Image (cartoon, rainbow, N blue to C red; front, side, top):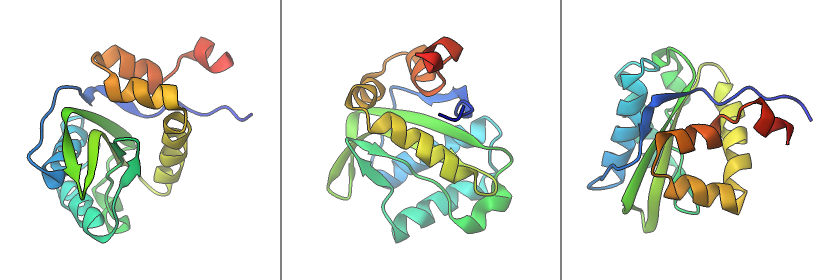
Length: 152
């Protein structure tokens, strides 16, 4: 099995006790977390909302993965993800979302990020751990396993 690089996750882009008034507010918060760690320029957040209007980023199991449009690549400074947890849930066009994972990637980096996230989210235990996480270190451990975790 090929070795994969850890997901580009800055602990400062993890927010575990957020609340949002609606889907767009939740997306904005994901984008603002990416902005706060210097991964994107402010214009990127608007493209995340634009993407959502064209196709839903809800992936199931209470998780959405908002990201910008292809046209927004120039607004990305470096690959990064943000994790924003909404313990009270957010209505996402009729679905209930408790975790948003924002993605910003240069080039086709988003494909790798989505594939790695899919591996985690397809495991019911790992997906539950992410949805119920209350500590930043827990999210980092899940999304950036150390060498021993990867070897097991």
